[in-house]
Amino acid sequence: MSILTEIAAVSAMNLRSLPRRLGTSSVVVIGIGGVVAVLVSVLAVSTGLVNVLQSSGPENRAIVVSSGTSMELLSSLTNEETLAIANSAAISKGADGRALASPESLMIVNLFKRDGAEAGAPLRGITQEGLAVHPEIKIVSGRLFRPGVAELIVGKSAQRLYKGLDVGSKIKLRGTTWRVVGVFASAGSSHESELIADSRTLNSAYQRGNLSQSVLVMIDPHGGFGAFRNSITTNPQLQADVSTERDFGTQESDQISAIMSIVAYVVGGIMAIGAILGALNTMYSNVSSRSREIATLRAIGFAPVSVVVSVLVEALLLALVGGAGGATIAWLIFNGHSVDTAGSGTGAQLAFDLAVTPGLVALGIVWACLIGLIGGLFPAIRAARLPVATALRAI
Image (cartoon, rainbow, N blue to C red; front, side, top):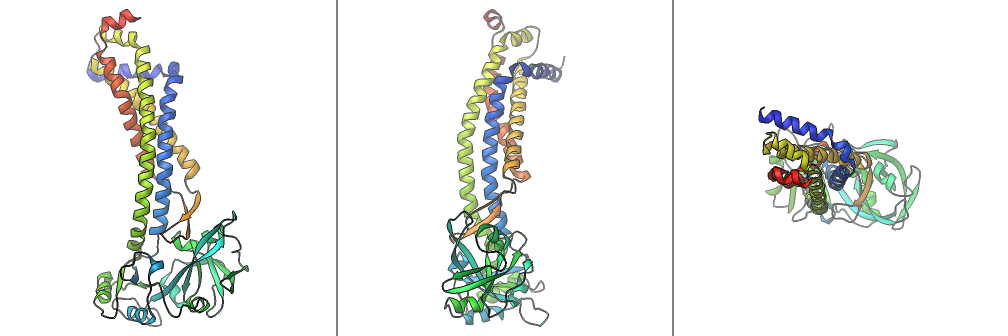
């Protein structure tokens, strides 16, 4: 009998006996399932947050902020600087021949969430002409704000998150009453958590002069981003940093992603140790209860490696069941579930959907297999090394 045939025969015998050991085997399945469910669910928060920060519109859109600023909110650009940026090279032109550049204001205003808690909401100022730089923004209810009028459009996530943002509602911000006239979607980007108003009206209401926090531009594909960046960095009038909007979002999300990953792996690691101990205890118990059976197989000529592999196969099968179950639970409960948190280092609330991706499911399965492998290895070695005569006398 070949070694592969022996392994298949012993493994099949082990698996057929699993129903008789359902209670002890379920300890391994439940323990590993819990580890995978926690790991995948925590990483789903990080994945969802990264997705919404990096889903920022067209790939050929760039953002310019004041030099040394890592966050848009902390940037400050004068009117002269925004004009110089709009006159830079390699910017696409609209149908009217004007550069597709959008000077934008950004501030945080206090609103009440639907649960009654007060939270910071991002309020963006933009011109109607600037909306050509944001083709992903689509009005889904109501209409667009009018220039020179205290009107707002709100992202669909912001409307879901805060009170009093239905179309037709009025909110008072720093002495000015603003009317909500529309709701917009922006392809799942972070802008859906914002309120947007006419920038000149907003700056006037907050007595901010002509300051902007950023300028967003559409890059001409013939010139390319490199030409635009060189035009900005070599202009002596400007002290500004420039990057693609996607890269800017990636920079904001990297730190958040790293923190969430650390939390996931630390918590998951602690739970994994417990699951490994549980698997060790269960597999040792299973090997002990089957010592006569294993000794008999050894006595009739089965190789020790057949016993080792058969125990590992059992442990890995239980781990796969637990891992698949944990990943399924995480997907059913958390995937697509909307949450909100303070995002981008601004203190403003950012609403996003948790994302249990195939990659996270695969990662959870890998963790389950590693836990099962470690938990089954030492009991498997013990089973192979068990002296035949000793095992038979012990029964």
